[in-house]
Length: 315
Image (tube, one colour):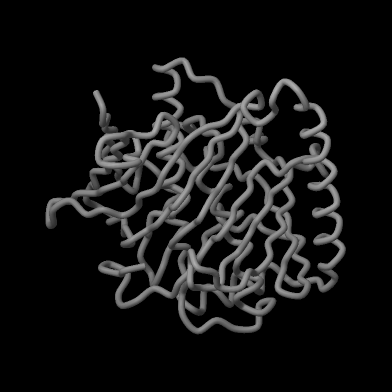
């Protein structure tokens, strides 16, 4: 089958932690959730094809419309995946295009997110001739970048104050989404810590699915935009949501253990030809892996204000 599909019926009671992600009073499915759906679908597909990899790569991710989750009625989610067309007669051997849709009783199918997904192994990154040298150069460059950016963040910011300012603007995080702390800011950049939360504690029977990275944890990494756009927690007029990512890489060795700490460094980038808007570059390092190559590397994360009521918001 060239375009497999995955379907799931989502009910608020079956995923209670979603209620901790509210925009203008409504529970809204996070962008991170779409990406974790795509990761799981890709993992299954790679298993069918016996593809081995240690990094998942996303490209050209975009979110078109918010997905509010009703309290009492189910939402059907569907993800489709197909080889990315590189022309009218050829498809990529590496990249797959994915789309996420939803359906409810009172409306037809709506597309929410689309993008490209692929994988990469260390063998692909390191050619057999000078692979060790390449790996050492990347490690040295990563360490130097981490130290330079980390040292530039010198002003401590109260994370609780940031969450309060964001909530006043209409984006309210509940307890399971409030695991950003140790916030330090610098010129157009931020350094903070995120901790893997106990999402299973609120789940029915305390059972949680396995993820390469949990949607809450990935959302916490995205939250590094808040200290920057609120100017360290000073003010925010309207709720923002992440709407696009140019490229993202996630290591399959990302530590998902409850309570594991990860350090995030984000810096604001000027508008470029891809985004035509300011964007963020974000790198996330595991506490035990510093200053190795980032476990999560994001380039070109764009946030935009929610337009109109959330129930029909274009984002």
